[in-house]
Amino acid sequence: MPLNRRALGEVVVVFVRLGLTAFGGPAAHVALQEEECVRRRRWLDRARFLDLLAATNLIPGPNSTEMAMHLGRLRAGPLGLVAGGVSFILPSAVMVTLLAAAYARLGELPSAEVVLATLRPAVVVVIADVLVRFARQAVQSSSLALAALLALGGSIAGIGEVTVVLAAAIAGVLLAQAERARLHGVPLLELGLVCAKIGATLFGSGYVLIVYLRTELGSRGWLSDRALLDAVAIGQVTPGPVSTAATFVGYLVAGVPGAVVATVGIFLPAFVLVGATAPMVERWRGQYAVRRTLDVVNAAVVGLIAAVIVRLAPAALGSGAQIVLAFAAATGLWGFRRSSTLVLLASVAVGIVRSLFAP
Image (cartoon, rainbow, N blue to C red; front, side, top):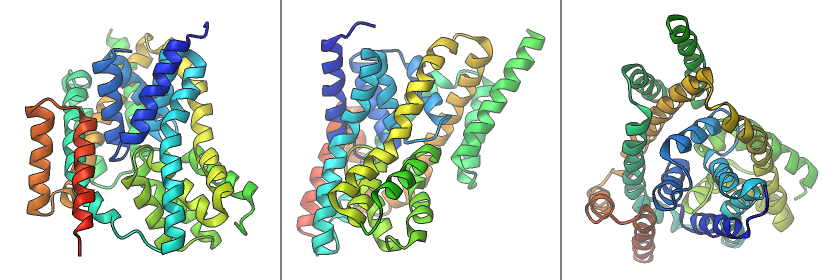
């Protein structure tokens, strides 16, 4: 494919902006990517977007970052894959490094929870908005509705996302067959390898990252549990991929070199996996068995997004003020047709103002 500089530049602009403004975690990131690349720019239709999202759920790594790679590749070829991923990761990694430096000096970041509490209601509304759009596309039969409901129920019951997605993929294969039959002190190399191991085995959303970090880093005595929790909190309160929590951890254990090594380690497997699987997704998505498998996985993804809303709602809507904020976000998103990015940025601004007056 010949180099299209204009398309490549467009990929960089889109994902740098999303990297600077995509607050709220993986589900919210996917909502913003769908709004930007499907609805506004029409790089692809929603069905193809859902297929790529299903594919990211079938491989390990940070899903929303892998979506940035897929979308960049779709728009500008192999260089677009790299540009999309790097552009989405880099703003967050830089911000997290700066916050890690402040944390290392001050020992705490007391305003983060105030901003998070203000942001959560808007995040729930944004995720609900994309849930409705995805459900219209992905749940178009009783069997797919059942798959979505089973994924929702299983996730709420505590079944891991990896198990839910793999079960959906197996169900899709079986369904296709049935229908066809009918019809610092820390060595940098070790730090990089540990983060690469996490990036290569992290199925599901970035919210389970804390378990991986505690197992791989906490067990080595590199960081306390409090520092690990703070790292994940910083990954959530900053825009861009939640997995930049590894950047924070890398800085704390080995300074700027550690931040760089940890960031490269956690995200490099995703570049390799998306680069390897993207051509196969495009080539095979028209085959019947693959099509039915992706259909069932898409329906399961709808159920998992719904489960995210159920899990976030108690913390996001735990006070009268948060309910008012959620109502304001819903009014902006659905009443005044404002973009999800604008709604989230407004919520962050309100959170910052509240943090200034917090006791």
